[in-house]
Amino acid sequence: MNFDIGNKKLHTQGKKRIEWAMQRMPVLELIRTRFRKEKPLKGLAVGACLHVTTETAALAITLKAAGCRPLLCASNPLSTQDDVAASLVQDYGIEVFAVNGENNTTYYHHIREVLDAEPEITLDDGADLVSTIHKNAFDEKPQKLPWGSTEETTTGVIRLKALAQEGKLLYPVIAVNDAFTKHLFDNRYGTGQSTMDGILRCTNTLIAGRVVVVCGYGWCGKGVANKAKGLGAHVIVCEVDPLKGLEAAMDGFAVMPLSKAVSQGDIFVTVTGDVSVLTQKHFLKMKSKAMVANAGHFDVEIDKKSLKKLSNREKEIKPLLTEYTLKNGKTIYLLAEGRLVNLACAEGHPAEVMDMSFANQALSAEFIAKNHRSLEKKVHGVPPAIDSRVARHKLRSMGIRIDKLTAEQKKYLSSWKEGT
Image 1 (tube, helix red, strand yellow):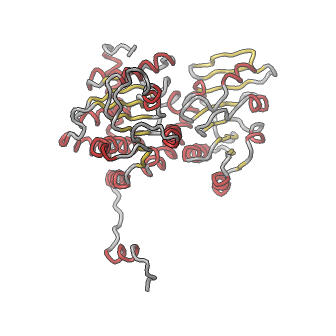
Image 2: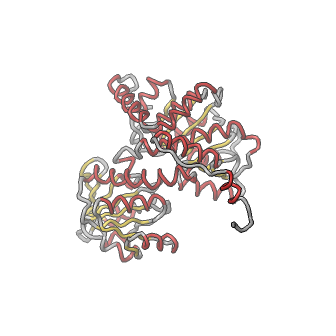
Image 3: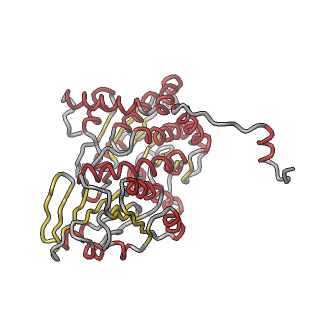
């Protein structure tokens, strides 16, 4: 923690922002109220590697209300909000190991600080805690393994499923990302809005009339494409999955190979979770003054090394906006150093969206505490009862009521006989 936690102005500002976020997270508030009474995590250490934002602060405060010792480090070096981190330490007594702009060495040092507490439960966003534990599992003095973990994002789930398929996953993980109330809302509405917000804050450019190329049409890509369309952009979707490509076409977007789209785009957004999406061959074909941003979890989708190699000049226009002048005379603008543009250049997802994601995190942590002895060492889905409970709480907070099936309707749906 390199920020000055004694800086009253810093942590006071952070506290106000945390309180503002918590006002817009009613589902988490309902859970927190119950946690205060029941203390389902009493006496446990819970290590979390998440984006240190106002919404994450609300989750950490909820976990502490459940009776545990929360320890928080960052899942991205550029997403930490230092005022929030300072407030969590100073005002809420929560241990935070994160500072905005930390280098790779400090980043992993902070992860080890959390793991040194030997948490019974870990919460991940990108699987860095879990992967670090697994890398250290065969040391001479390996740490005590957690009871279980949760995983917040698509990229992390992919990594963990690969680990499980190889039979190397050492403890159970709940894929919070795959909950309906997470991926449908967080990925589509949250990533869509916050990605465009990050691009606008960083560049203050007009989106209307521009050609925005979205690489990847998963839940996050759908959100980005729709928000860009809503701002008046002409949107091109590039995909490798025929089903997703077909869906994008049926949703009204132009669909074509990246090799064709690259000469048409004004703004490029990678949202694939894979490596080397935009590479040297693409940079050379881009229009001059094209803008390139990433909304995938890791900074591997844009080949920054090739971009540097192709350039004879690199200039910081403003924080997190870098101009590369290529040897062929063209210029390309890279946002957020190729890291998550929605968190580095903006504030990430709105609190209303993270309310559901973090409700799933909190309830899944409780589920692990109660059921860890019977859980297999694999990647589990969020129990449907938790997903439904989060949805019911959210509807209730919005003042919305829905119908219930009658006994006759339930009987009909559970019968194999043809209806009469």
